[in-house]
Length: 445
Image (tube, rainbow, N blue to C red):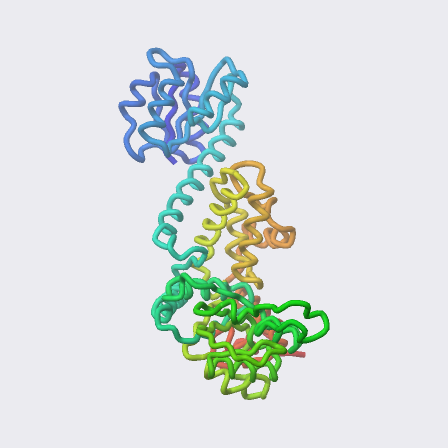
């Protein structure tokens, strides 16, 4: 890194220069602020140690001019008259820190390291924000990876076509976000978007929620209730976890799609509806059809277009962007100014496997921002289970083979060693997966 020392005491210049050059930095010295400012060009200095008391312009004046011309430069003020008020004033003017004479070289080294780390974090923050700007119109759907770009491309194409869609993907990958995106960019955008989770309910409860009911239809029905489908008239219905819907209820939903009308529970008057259906599932619906757990005719009615969302581990190049997006989001939510994430925490966040996908990463960053005490998220702000994996990256990086073995092992455990499903998740031919399992000794015992 390039460092400037501005101090009218030659002995201070030489002492700091020797110590910092020994640490591998390039150092230039100046006896006055005017000479330093004349030499201040874009990118020629990363950090400056600046004495407050100087001949000519004082250090505070030089600080103001330097930060006005080069906001990215870090400044550490040096003084023989340290005070809390002066320190606060300097930091308000943009100084990184404030150090008092006599100088302690270990303190100087620590401040140098911290200032340069802060500069790198700010630079990375700006770079990622610049990459995020073109994606602002996509809300929380962030991604530059080829797989996510394909998702965006298909979603844009299908949005205005008013056809039914199935969104396939693991839990936490953002299926409802994609559904909302499609609705928002369709001709139905000014009409309701209504979501319903099909899992964990009896057929009777699903029917009353979807179709509504007339007064007196059953015990407790003291008033007429408008159902979800009726509420969504001329809009979009999002059927989440469609694979969990009971078979008998699937038949009723199929009739709604075919006839575009419903009858409330306990009623006898059909209601004509105009609806678009977007269904989502984390299950393999083709297999469910072949096993008789999902109606084939309903599958084909819904599956006009299928969009497959990748897991977060299938799009690792998106993790830094998502981290920055959630940092910005939760910094604003909690009224904090978080500049970035330190290297140890970033290494862990980019190496973690995220079984909960983007939703898990979002929760991790929200927690970290909430707990962060300074302007940087550190390893200590991450959940304990992530902190536990940090030692494996402390100067001892795993090999690519070791990471591959670990990932395949996790996928096999997730699928209970179902090689077909594991091969699908890993995007590998089954024969290739078998060879890798044999190579790494991962056969089920």
